[in-house]
Image (cartoon, rainbow, N blue to C red; front, side, top):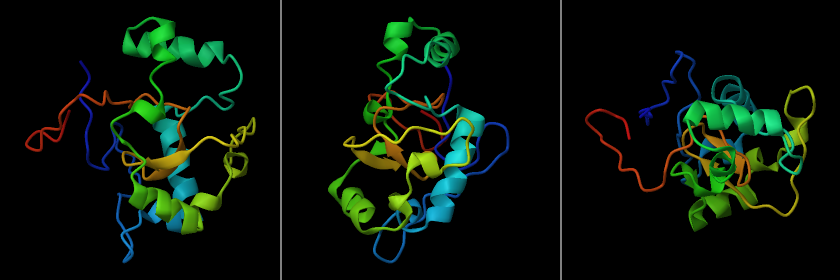
Amino acid sequence: MTTMRKTSELSDGIRAKPLIKTEEQCPLCTQYPGINIANHVVAVDIANLGPADPAQPSEEFWTAKAKKWGIPIGEARSRLCMNCKEYDNSQENMDCIKKGRGAKIKTSDLPFTPKWADIEGVPAAVCERFNITCTSIRTCDDWVDPTMEYDSRSQAY
């Protein structure tokens, strides 16, 4: 079983901006577009956040996730941000997203080729792992089972 670190130190030494909150107790990614974009790039580069367009079959993406996690493709397709332990859609964060400039970026604004698809009408929340606003229907290699307990001594699930 893979252990997940709760800290901002990622597996290959790359660091995302930590989940620091503003005076209003809002995650920085909801308030500052530059932080949100930079952390999205980190999440894509080291944790394969995706798929680029969740409305498409993305067979290669889901096959890679299934292989990484050692599970059938159908089960991999069910491991989405919306049911990850790191996905925080608390009312406080939803309020921060509504009022913050950082959450106003569209995924098509991200510096990726091919361009990512904007997903309209799908709730976004905050990914505490990467300090990004996150669409509920994407996923990444660092998906955490919501039933896992965090061990503060080992800093792992």
